[in-house]
Image: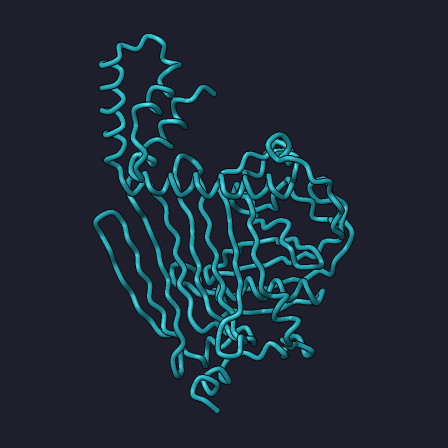
Length: 354
């Protein structure tokens, strides 16, 4: 038995809750997936949903025998006048033990505010490193979590794997683990699993598997997260009950499609927006690019003043009286360089007629 296997033997055994638990080649492939969800406000009707961000999940097999998992989660959103998001990179075993995880949450509010937690596995404990960045201040804290008292710890990356597995086997019952917040606080994490049942969700009647996760902190605070999935473990909705936004499947996608249909090939120039899959991919890329450009501009505040000076020079130099023509003039005069492309994106967003 290798040193790593000896260490992992000290952690929880998921077969204590699910006696028939096993990961074979078929399950391994089913647990690897890629999904993109949109983030929207809860008080908006489904058909009028205006995304405020995106949430991307990627799970793939790694390791010498492809028996381990790499989980990558990234989100970004713009809410209450601030841009923020989160990132998770996690590796886990086929028994859902976290080997290593780095989780980051950030928001731009009068500068960058960022929290990072790193979890690594050692001989008798989890090693935890917390980093907080606030404007010009940066602090670091480290601590160890003994296997004797924290053997049931489950990371947020492993949480993605666990929920998918539970949906695939249609598990019914309650699981109890321990989780750790971005601030390093431990909490009890209860998974209440309800088998798939027919219900209406966002205008679709389909079989829905439900997981209600209750995070109980030491101070008595309880946070509830309700996740709805298809029997194939596709996420339909991920809802933190105490926040104003929710994660949803793209409203253009049909979660109840069971078979592929034959489509007549037609030129895409006039009808590509009618292709749900293509239009969905277009929206995914659109919101990704918006987040990318927003993050770029937040990292380079000097661009704002540069744009103001540049536009003022054009206005004065060309004696513009018709402000509606400013975009064609800018397109004609701005050179195609990588730096100017980033500026041009902002110019088009702010100066194009709505």
